Length: 445
Length: 112
Image (cartoon, rainbow over all chains, first blue to last red):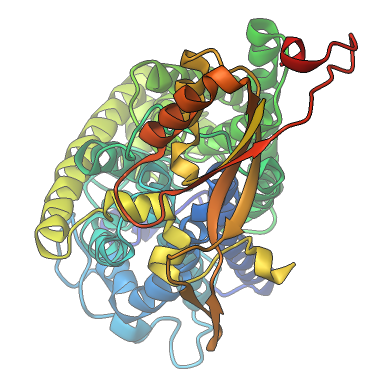
């Protein structure tokens, strides 16, 4: 039976299981959802730039924001030229990497760009390629939170480029492109909008990169409070707004998408509230930075589950993710690990908790066999316990692949262009050192 | 009594504060300032427009000490703020007529 909704990022690999799906017929409303979603997800990258920029010192804010903003240029080009093809083409007939047949988006959406994506999907293929490109941009940007105030910008350029090609594209293929980890593959894990592909991948990369690049000079004595807390709230607000595209539009069909919009915003609300209540009880005061961080944690947690759970489960995911991320942030500070802006503690931990809870809480009715054959089979035979085990496997494989791959890329970049600026340049501030600019120059008063 | 005005690198403020507190100089005021001495200026670029900015970021620390503590305070600040590179900053010493604590009306050294 053809379901009325698309339900999540799809497995594109042609297979016998798709025989059950009717040929796609491009629908204007569904395609418009993707175009709107793309614009929303794009806005998350400057939103993230503000979120991260608020945390750093005044002398490093432009460099911190550029580490995200610049990727709208670099990855924006890379995605069209080759990234999409590596993630979603089937040319190599591999469950780990796509192919080269759709470089320059050749053939995507047909001659007029309006051809439907695949059987069972009524969105245009061109809108899907655009939507996916926005995810490819923000994922490496998330990693920058672990490396701010010390990484050389040239090293960041090469790291982002190589990481996008050799880590992100294979991850997207494995989970969403009909590959090894996803609902058409060996493992059968489901990831609605990127809990694994985006947040675990970025978080684990951040963890490894923090260990390899090392802490900021003089850390932890040199730590300073955030230089602009209103920026943090502005950024978190833009991220929440954009997440309606990230999770909401990942439904791929306008009619049912109210559902993924609702789970997304409910989880964020629950996590914001949880984080503030924990602070209130422990420290006597709820903080603005805590509210912003809690909201982002809740959005991360619901990402893999947004279309697969009902409202009570979405609320549980928001609360659980906030508690887990709060603990991670606390432990990170206690062991003096300089994951400067909590890229692992929020995205890595939140993504992991979300992925595992998606396995434990996914509703079978929302995981239709036509779209998720392997996962539906797991659910039917072993229930949520079996899907939970599948998700543990997917998480472990992702940690291993991303961790080792990131270490290799950092080693190559470190050996060629060098990872860090000098301690003197750190002291001067990276805005001037890397860009020749200052955010708050008294000569402009 | 003497007023000490030290212009130092922003990264050395914590060290200078700790060094002064260690010799029982309590109370100081800091300002975020920009300036230049023998250091050269720097060039910034915004959309192709070049600006030569001769003022580099520094922190100004102001404190008042009794005469017998002056030399100890000067060496504490100097040692804490020195890197040996151009741009370590300067210390200015000026005489102070008196000091009044507003809350109690104490004057002179008792008000420090």
